[in-house]
Length: 120
Image (cartoon, rainbow, N blue to C red; front, side, top):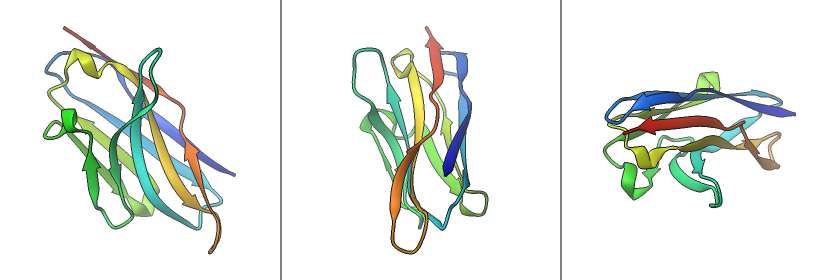
């Protein structure tokens, strides 16, 4: 089994900053891509930022220049530094990891959501 535990989130004023962290544990052979998604009521979960095992990153257009995704492979951790937050970023945020549990098989795992609320 693999578990992803998310920390961070909360209430912040517009223009403020928050850091989200997600740590994987369990039967991990290797972690490939890691990512952060967000979801608001009635909408599908959408990619916010992703990072490959080699450190290549991608961002949803509205967060470019505001969010930074990083990872610590030794700790099986992915972070999302969110700066200059806007009210429209209010959502539940989820981390995702593509985890190899052996040389051949990989599965996608999700952490629990954490609420980010940006007040205007």
